[in-house]
Image (cartoon, one colour):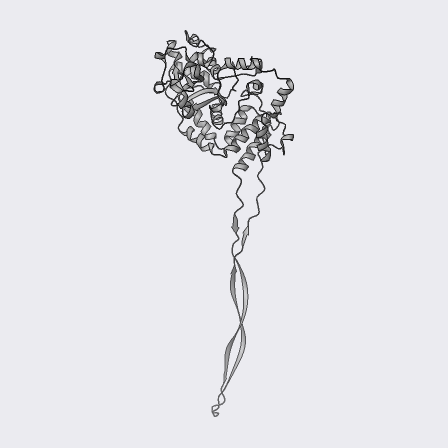
Amino acid sequence: MPNRVRGHTAVLAAVLALAPVGTAAASNRAAADWALPEIRVVTSAGLMGAKSPATFRPTANLTDQALANLVFGLQQLLAPPQPAPVVPVPPTTTPTTTTSTVPTTTTTDTTPTTTTVTTTTTTEPVTTTAPVTTTTVATAPPPPPPQPPTVAHPNADATMTMLDAELVDGVGLSAAAAEYARGARAAGLNIPARFGTEVAARLLGLRIDHPAREDELELLPNDPATRAEAAYSAAQIIHSSGWLVPVVQNLADTFSLPTLSMWQKRILDTAVARIGMPYVWGGTSDGSEVDFGVPARGGYDCSGFVWRVYKLTRYPGEGDLADTLRGRTTYVMSGEVPRSELIDFDHLQPADVLFFGAKGPDSSPSQVDHMAIYMGNGWFIQSSGYGVALAQLTGWYRQHFAWARRPLREAGLAG
């Protein structure tokens, strides 16, 4: 299952009940060590100012200048500067002297009565000068080595949103981010400023889902990014070697959403407002909560995200909308609607709730292990291993799509 999708909170409760409670020391070790493989990649590449993981300071906040240095270093690594071109020097002309002998003749005539004529020939040197052209090819002096840009507030903390935005721009996807934002706005959605870059960043894989017992490490979009989080994202870019960049750009070039009804816009506005929020197992909150004894700053699992949008958000004139979803887990919510009311793949509409199971359409509710919200034109929004993100209903998702339900219709809010 891609992106470490998880949705069975009841199963998690049982697992955590059997597991021993971790110590504060173990939590601190997890905070320092979780990105160690990625830190090794970054330090080996000479990035982030540390020569080895031992001096990396993973739990320290990432500063604005450190972020600028990281982006600059990645650009130099992935697209190193070309060597200085060979510049021809204009031709120069050097005069060359040559000497040759030219015979000259002198004739002397005697008086008319003398019949003897004497002719004397002498040789005199004559000097001529011929130009010789010499062309010299020289290499232009090397330019000074490029330097990272100096930022206005070098010691300020860079947020998770800034980390994503700068990395997306650094790999050349700022135009793609703008296309995602334009497509959403064209459909009438009220999106946050970070929408486009978060969509691109998640498609690049620039987020990790920490294990459930380490959900306190999950960061909100406006939280200061740690150096460990920056190393993780940088390593993903290095591993992909740029092949993902044109894929994300191509998706952006065709991104669009269909015409939305008033209620579809309301539901999807609530969903997209949470783009970039982290995945938290059992989470349903925009802010701090404790799930199964583990504190978290905020976030959702897959069913918790749908619960947040449909159950915990109040809409003017919603009627019975909040009551349409009764159970909390994926397998309960997937089985609350009679088979005759389920939506198949060919009849999906924006704001439908999607369910995925091991056997696709042949899954039973107990086999449904993931859910999301459809946006239209093959795109949906979910909370998964990359946090709240957009994805396409292709590949694994298409193969495991089971069915959908339409809470708006169930509540009589089709308009």
